[in-house]
Image (tube, rainbow, N blue to C red; front, side):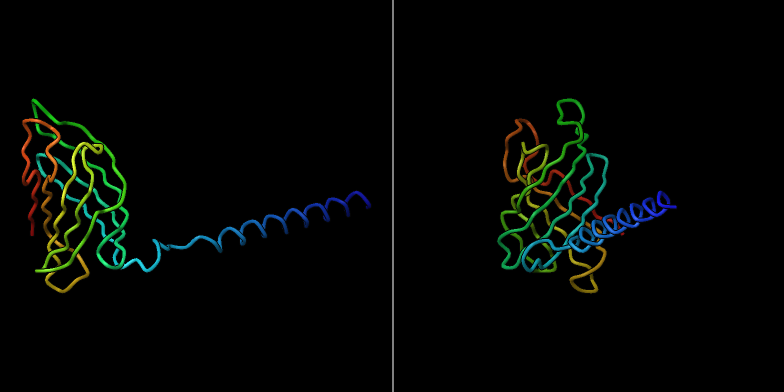
Length: 155
């Protein structure tokens, strides 16, 4: 009887500790992307010459924001060819003329810097859009196109 009582006390103590750990850590999990994030943007674009996936959090004032970017480039003989990942801070961003533009985004494993332009949906500033233009703004890779490296427009 005494042994059974000790087991129940030990089990109850473990449950209390487990509950405290669970609720103590779960309360800290939230989707805060920085002080006053204005936009969260996700871009997925595919074409014969390459594919891009970009996630960005844009801060107030149009001067900063964080991004994650993965590209898979297929330019054939002479390259570049392959999949690479980049992350960092955008140099600036703006919304105007029906377009969201982000500058200073690294691509190709940091070998190039690009400006990303995405048309805003016809319904306003939120929603699904059907196009993206990526313009290389640094010319680090010799023999590769410097302006629109990638442009996708759909329906």
